[in-house]
Image (cartoon, rainbow, N blue to C red; front, side, top):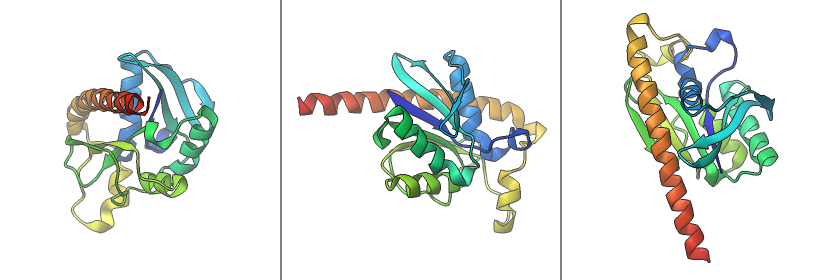
Length: 188
């Protein structure tokens, strides 16, 4: 079983903001696979289901982005997951809008949600799907930029990105499952 965690900020004010790309992607995944995110516990909104034969819990922390680690720790303890069974989906200002990259471990690159998770769990050994949202022109515009909604002209691009993100999550999950199965076979 895997935990697929989308990062974002709760509430209508942030609903369609660039910083909520992780929320938007896991919502799209849940919708595609008929997973209802109806349980509210462990500082998260979550649901359990299947993605291409893999049992998953899809979750959105209901803490603010910079406190995501608190929700992840509660989910791990409450649902008995280990960090190597986590896939975090998040926005990334270092990638242009629409670019998606996979990462299996590493630092936070300034993403405060990741920093919170890494700091709380004490490990960076978990999978991520990074979704590019682009970067503002100057460094002092970053906070306003990531918390701003997408422009009307960007909405069709965002919908395409979400489709690519869902495929990316499915592919990453298949890779994690394959790796896990190989490890289990080696330990038998």
